[in-house]
Image 1 (cartoon, rainbow, N blue to C red):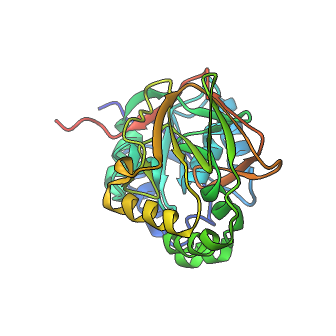
Image 2: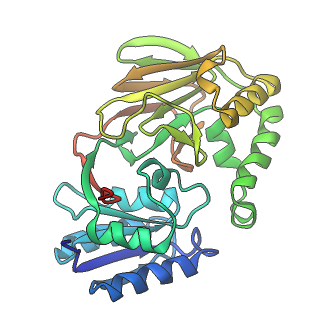
Length: 296
């Protein structure tokens, strides 16, 4: 084993407020294995990106880890350039989709082993209006839910806050038609989501053909709006049947534009990251991520 000697952990206390114990156990396991750990705590949005960029620029860390939810991981990833140390993950968020995508267990021991001796893999992230995202970015109902979600409700109820806000928006949202261009091909939908990962909301299969290692998106298009179709889509997602539902299309593409109501929200990995009109492309610079080490 060739453990990392210096680990920088960028911690978002908002997303990880209920799981500080896990973070402390991870740090203890790292230090017991001989690693030197520096913990830097965010105070406001944007801090995680700035702290990651600062740490990468210091040139003394073997790993820069994001401790928080998927939004925190995205921020840290946006602070890492081509020559930065690999990205590590301490999942403390609501859904932890990225951790599920790379097969990272939630136990402190498994997390620490991955930070110390994980397998380095290059992944191809997306860029939404220039901003890096790791799992997915989209416009339509799911972006409207993210934009309207009460942060206090999210902190108190976790995943259930998204269910509550979706139930509200499925009746309130007016489902405007979006003009979507995929590698030059024009189509229309009421919701469009460009996916690099396969999962949505945690363990639920959403884009079965997506692959972090491939420089391509799987774009999921929803053709119908309204409360009844949305209820059908949600039920099918939970049951693992979404790819079979009529009115849901899965299309591979590398370059995507979405036009619709100007200023409408765009979500990336569960956070508001942009506004329409939207241009999505593969990030030309791969990101190195620590995956769990192979099982002997």
